[in-house]
Image (cartoon, rainbow over all chains, first blue to last red; front, side, top):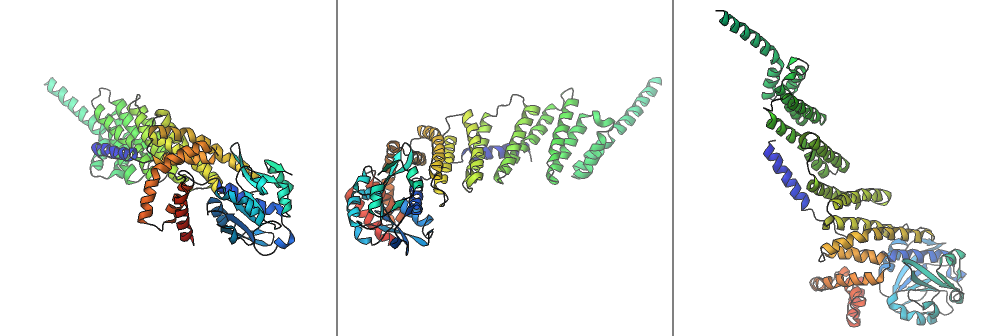
Length: 179
Length: 335
């Protein structure tokens, strides 16, 4: 190859390199997998009364379908809790819910926590909210952010009202436990 | 008569000497011209252990023969022999008669390392590309120009190399991804040491760190024990923190680029920093909303677009009426 061609080749290559565009990215919903993972762990570390240990294990998401629902559906549906198979459901109105083991109420629907709590009075549905102060509105577990970490707080009394027994392992990791 | 006799003696001696002295070189040259490089190599190698070894042109010829053989026989080690031969030719060229020619041979041979680096890069042999580029620089300094400035060349090459690592890591998972990300970041940082005001390397380092953090969370093993969740979260946030200074710099350099804003939004979201998340999400949504509405008009059944509109009208630009409208559409599309 002649010198001229060499130089031309080099120039072409350098031009090609310098025109390379940086790789683009897409924002990912990185909070939802953490919450979904906690919800699954709640399922494994809470005891439901015997009448709730038959049939499917229903984890419901109350509110619009969003990241937590998608994560639960794709990662946990079909897995077992004891002898029960996890089924993930989405509800947009209280009337759609017949029986759920866990009901995660999305932040946008958090105003419904009080009425949902009344609806499930005497039933063993673990209501999980994501709004400051919602343990006092009947949620047994509430997602909170402490510093930069996703945490959860527990109201043992609310859990007890629904005949739910929370394992010490879960209580230890809670950022706050209300008796 | 005596003078003529002396001249004849000298002529005989010179002819005998030159005949003997150029025997191998002449033969090697003839074979080289016939493109019989393998035979030319044998004669040139014989010449360098004979009295002909003091002839600069022999070494030039030997360099050319080995350079040809490197290509025809695909033997990379021959390139070094060619370079050594040209160096020896230059040493023997005491009056500098062949200097320009020899320097040209050297440059054209050494640039093969550079071209080799490019080829390796294209073939995704990233370590080979780096090694070849380093050899190019080393030999260029040693044999061609000891004061050579590689700043621009380094910027272009390491940007290209880093970009290849960025492509590679997008196909990997786990430890291997972390390992290769570190390499990619290393090359982009080399570029930034040379010029910190470059948009691309800043964005790419930021993106590599962000993706590493995001992948840790998105790909968590569903059976991760409870106690490990905060540990993984913290590790991921470590990557988001590392990404931020690079992304902020990229944003300073080009405020219009939505991919930078998107990555910044992602970092602050992952860091649970809602104030900054809202700030960048708002900028992003302002840019994206007209595009999304247009897309929805063109393709009303696109679930992703409708989901985004639901999110925007329920968060960034709260509008209950529009939220309900798109939420209803979304529900119908998902049924």
